[in-house]
Amino acid sequence: MRSTFNTHRIAQECGVKLLAPKEHNGATNRPGECFCRATVKWIGTTYGPDHLRLVFNLMTGTKQNAACLYGDLMKAIARILHEDQALMRRATLVSDFDAMDLGDIRRRAQAMKCGVPLAERAGVLISLHLADAPLAAAA
Image (cartoon, rainbow, N blue to C red; front, side, top):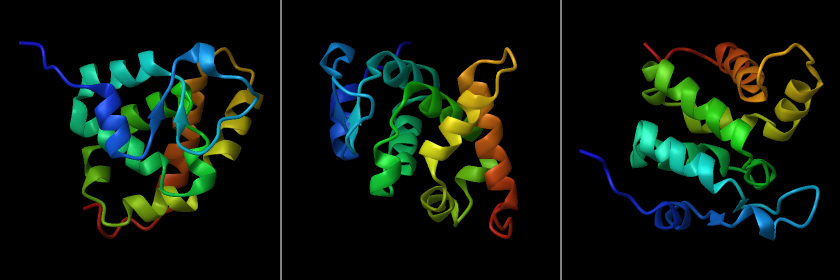
């Protein structure tokens, strides 16, 4: 049975404005603007609407990170959370993401020219950052 959910409603609940890619008219996003509807739908369909909410909430904790709602970063975070379920129980997860500069992580991932998709490169960098964070609540 296929789960039905409204991506726009979920985005709105999380303070995200989901826009069509053709509406993007600049090099950067404004905080809370997301132009990757296909990725949002993929995350919700693959991992569920609650997982999508968590991804949105982790990415919009700071104004700086809220301007980084790019599909590659969203996929990276969704996959990390799915692969490491203990992260979702970590008491410091939100503050760990707030301490990250997702824009810098994305720029560093883009600079790695190694034949690996950008979402996977970004995922490695995010995982390394989370590995440096205290693990007391993760166990």
